[in-house]
Length: 127
Image 1 (tube, helix red, strand yellow):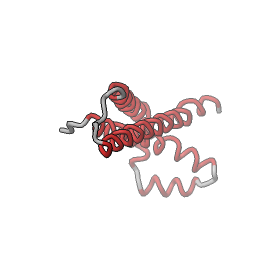
Image 2 (tube, one colour; image 1 turned 120 degrees about the horizontal axis):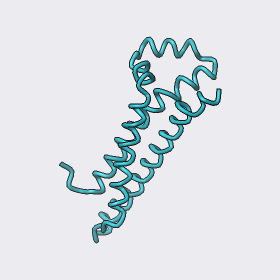
Image 3 (cartoon, helix red, strand yellow; image 1 turned 45 degrees about the horizontal axis):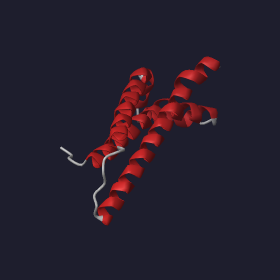
Image 4 (tube, one colour; image 1 turned 180 degrees about the vertical axis):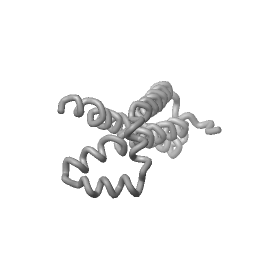
């Protein structure tokens, strides 16, 4: 078990980023490929990676899992924001760097989920 809460938060942010990447793969990638006229390439990709069809068919679950992980990691980051960093200058710099990277990864994951939700749920209703 990871004892350092900052490393745990970085790990949670990374897991949230990977889960939110699934939303991009299930919903954004096919829409962008078709809109760019690469429908044949998409058909080849689906043939090579048939799990894309499963992700698209279960997009509500994919988004639910991504949102849950995003909320969990966001809560952990919020709780850890006031934790003290070590007094050693090298360790303090590492602590600050981990906090920045955790926040950046979380923001990237939130943007990925938002973009995926736009393509999966909003744009199809507008068409």
